[in-house]
Length: 483
Image (cartoon, rainbow, N blue to C red; front, side):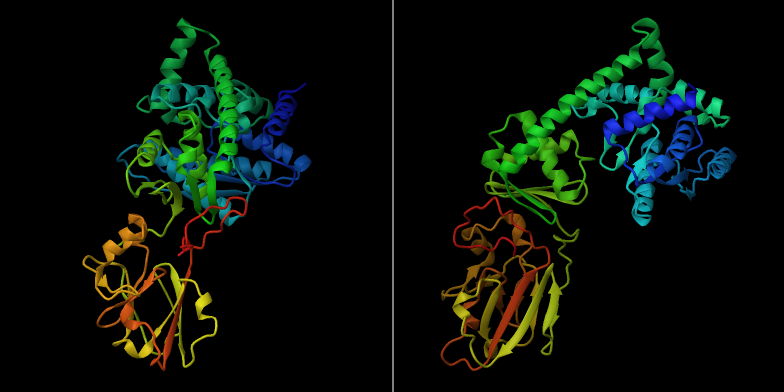
């Protein structure tokens, strides 16, 4: 059997085993000009008709090696033309400061993501092979990575697939030689200033020579065992997560802290990671330090929050832990005050939509309204209505009371978490606060038997969170979590 046929047979078996792609998929192939990605390009071009695949090769030119970078670009153009695979080329500039290797990786993936979304493709295919897998395992070991890190490179991680993990680099080079396809060697691969290059060029040969000639294969085998353990614990944690989840939807996941704390530490780590994933759509970039911060948050007193990657905030609200995605300026003190004109019927501010309606007759179902709607005496207003965030020193006379109360004290008495206080719109006129949205009307604008004009204000959150039908909970008499 030819090398090509043998590789195609192994690739299809590996792809089917790991569910890397399916018939009719649209696959983005990340290609440099090296042997590994060129071999992937060649093999996938041979499989596309039997699987009815749509292929798009993407080459990122980092422009770091001068003329050599341009020659790589031209070479991959010729290979794609020969194999009849469409090609997209993107040139990016990184500069020379900082961690060049890491910044290049981040820039590549940002570009891949944009193209994947624009072209409506299913998967990103990367050409890491078995020895890359072994090196990643060892690097993660030295870094003190957890169980997931010790799994090395996963064959399928979200929408990123690694089909070449079925091969070692020598097999891929032999494949290209048989097919008469050339490749280019990146001179930077010999630059031992980069950690992975030192691992590949110095440490691995030393380990193979002095300790075990099969060191790479053994490391791959170990990574496979760690991967099985990782998947097993993750499945257990997902089942536990479903039991302790109080709400889940639209970028927010709410967990019961008492139930979460019943889990052992390793299970709790996986639960927190999966809750983060469900909030933002990825497990990437949630580091061990973030998990330690989350553990401290769980045992802290009062209501607090920490910032996590991908715009996620982890918020402790009494006995609940919220993973939420909020607008970036949600705590910005510079947020503008919105003034409502007399003719205005609707307004959007602070992630809420408001409607205003003047009435001459009190609605029949006024007692059935929840706290997202208030009715006040329009003639007790002074000037125009304004909507803003709370400020230090805010005072008002809560509905039913006669004395002023600091807004801070009101929130404490109502057990409003510190973080949520900045999310609650405050309504005022030219003289006074008139409504703490969703919580309490000011007594000075309440309607009475002498009222002839009523103003009805309705508030609707633009970030409504759908409650899980299967997980109900008691929240006292105030069912205002969405506002």
